Length: 154
Image (cartoon, rainbow, N blue to C red; front, side):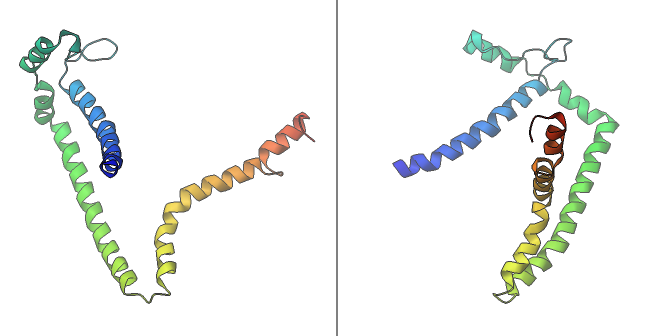
């Protein structure tokens, strides 16, 4: 029982963190535009209970989605996004599979070094931030020199 609970907790957490924002965006997408804050009309009023929910279901309006399919600007954006996604996927597969194959067939003593070469680019932005903070906070760094100039520290 305890094991099932321990497994269920992360799934429940993910469900809440993904489902709730999705439902909020869905609610907004089915709302009408309004000059107000927030800039849409409230669609679902839970204070009315079941009657409010049935009224909500009877007033669902898909005009926003229909508008998106009628305008050429949105179609161009959709098709451009799909084209970029397809090109990115193909390039990733063309580059990734030979690298993975080479790593899988490499001698055991080479595998850690090859894995490091694959992982290293993902560390770059973090590494740059760490070195930047070291430069700012070190004894010869900008912050320390500024505090010495102000006379706050010696």
